[in-house]
Image 1 (tube, one colour):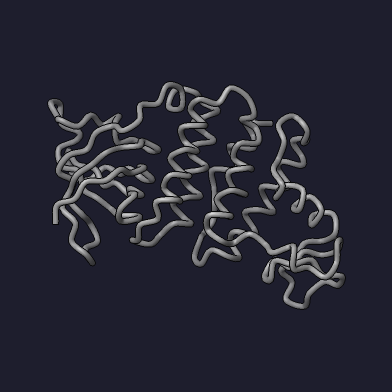
Image 2 (cartoon, one colour):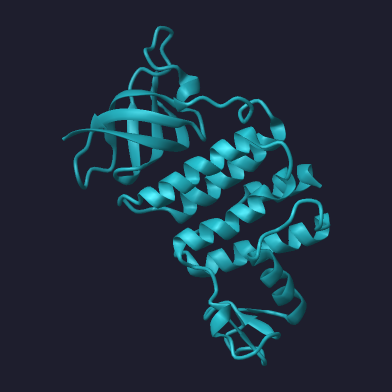
Length: 238
């Protein structure tokens, strides 16, 4: 079946002499893997730069349900970045956003609201003038909302205490299963869920919050695996 869609490139991998394999999150079919033939040839119709990591593209291709790799017929930029690929700091933040998204979104199913959120995030990052040090932190909070995994603190029977990371509520005693935050971390986690303001948190607080969020994600996203890009990100944003 021939189809057209918009997509965000989550992964770009060389394949054979001149082709590339692309993991693309599409607005019509969710996450798909495509093969783009001849992209790396000298006179290719598709520029390799247009299918790099984080590219927002328009594409047409042939979709066969159940097939592991789909074929691209045509692919071209939908949004051309002004700064993101050329700014080391923005590129590092974008790489983190891409890695988290790719490990959290695995299904072949359309979610136009989530797709719009992600494409808007990359556009905002491209145009961002201040607040870069907290952009990825607020992204994690907002993505958690779209994925439906944020804790239900309004159901808590206490106002302060230990955050039960399995049930997503505050409790007055540490739960036996061990997946909880102590009082200090629980307080920081709660603050961050309300949005991390630019210029008000120390580098230590930001590093602690991202670790807590990634731990929470790993509990609620099956087979998420380890996120690696935040280590470099924390270093260059300090």
